[in-house]
Image 1 (cartoon, helix red, strand yellow):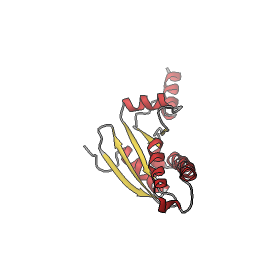
Image 2 (cartoon, helix red, strand yellow):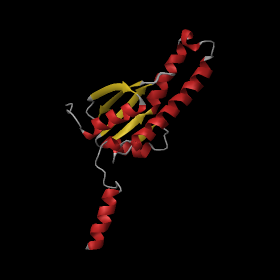
Image 3 (cartoon, helix red, strand yellow):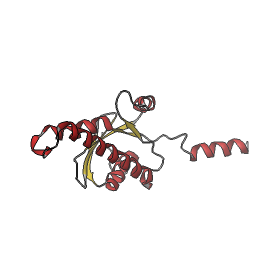
Image 4 (cartoon, rainbow, N blue to C red):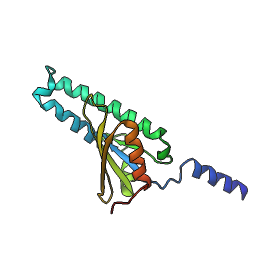
Length: 155
């Protein structure tokens, strides 16, 4: 009996029985949004559209990597599983589809190159939307506060 209690304790502490909603970072959206800046000739400053798109894709991917790192380090995010949706051919599509069947959040970043802060939006499965802006650490803290239900609940 003691061994069963020890095994269950280890599984619970390791997060195997995590019942917190997962944020799904919609990097497919993030990249499409950022690429739109490459359609404005005044913003290109002599850069070709193709070169601009390659640059912003790289910048968005680096930003999302930094954001997931910040989320994984944030104490407020303890026990939250973070998923990154990169499109229908995503390597984690099965995990994402499973997460979308239960309570989850869709997180998108309206990425703007060379900005020290970014705007974000997040919706739950009932399409209740929250949004904000800030640095990586501010976004991580606020996103996890919403997921953990710290504060009011949007119905």
